[in-house]
Image (cartoon, rainbow, N blue to C red; front, top):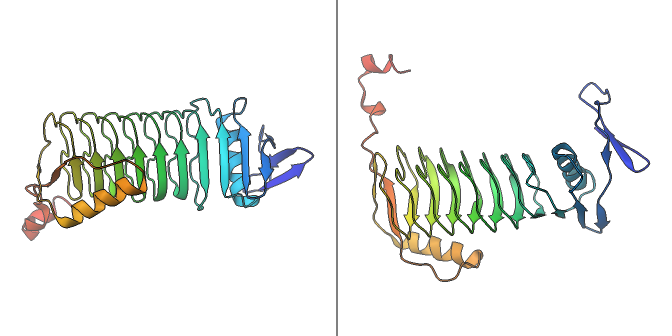
Length: 263
């Protein structure tokens, strides 16, 4: 819970006690349904509290955060439909656990961006680090630059689009969803994947265990054309499609006497 005192806001915990050092400056310029603030001198906690105050309490649906300074864990846990624009770069673990917002980052992002993203759209104008979109469940994640290793690890839904190259073990243990990669991909693509589709326009260093070439359908063409049109990515290049070979689908074939040892 927050209360206002002059130009400052104090936050309280679940017991109603003031949290130590929890006063947060009211720094935003609000104009109707839009707002913005400079994060240069704010901590991660202050930035996130300011965002929550604007979106949840003031009903703002369009927020611009200037100079985030590559701070870690920024813009997480936003569960409202709104627009957020970060003018600059974010550090590790940014934009995770979000469900609904449309977010743009004009710079780069570090490791584990958009982890457990549920829905919405994230557009990153430059590069992203390793583990981008880990355990992602829904929405669209667009990285216009390149990404590091294990992009979409344990992906459970949604679409990841990479405008550049992708690192090793991309789509490792992928369970559902789609990845569209315009550049080259490192070794181990789709290793141990269960479901989902991977589309690669560049060269693949090597395929991971149980990742095989898939059959192209009209639905693949329609989906890729639609994503490119929505996000202004131009004309789609020619892609190869990769899916799970299902050679590792062994659990359901076990005898009842065997199952008790793996449950």
